[in-house]
Image (spheres, rainbow, N blue to C red):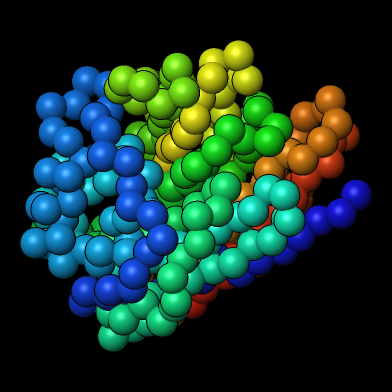
Length: 273
């Protein structure tokens, strides 16, 4: 089985980054939401979130940030995936807020990691979102995981949340919730894994998106530096299932199952102050 790896860097920045994109986000309305994506963008831009980040961030993750006025942008990286070629490309935002990239192509999948920090507490907000801009080649559940050093961080109880949306009827109407949960697939002191649910082919989804999020509480006073690890696995063939396990911080991720898959890995040094 052929596996492809990519580094999805968690770039830390505290100011705005700007980079042109080849496509704009769909300006729809989430099921149950009273604000449009355009309205959310306007508010988040005023709070200092980079335009390039907002253009590729899943609407569900964007709504979560919109609802948290006390959270400050602290980093993002956008990665694209082309199903036909199997090519992954990542575009990161530098520490000075400038996105050092050319025009981002209209690929099948965009993956966006971000870290934000609360202005009213010591806690760190971690979010990972995805957007399929075409029907996923192999519908089902894609395992995702994030690992951190439990010497420095601990996930706050009941802070985990994940949601998956899809546009039924080939993109006509509102985006509807496909899957939503506050529980995860597995968790330990050093990591958490969950599943991104993809719509079945009969649901005629022209696009689907979602994200996972959680809060981390520092276990030591800053400043200190530590490494975050992330992993995303996409099933590419076979009738079996796949799962993701975090054996222990620093020992990587273990993918098990009897299906073919592509896997994306990342690591990034994060300085907490």
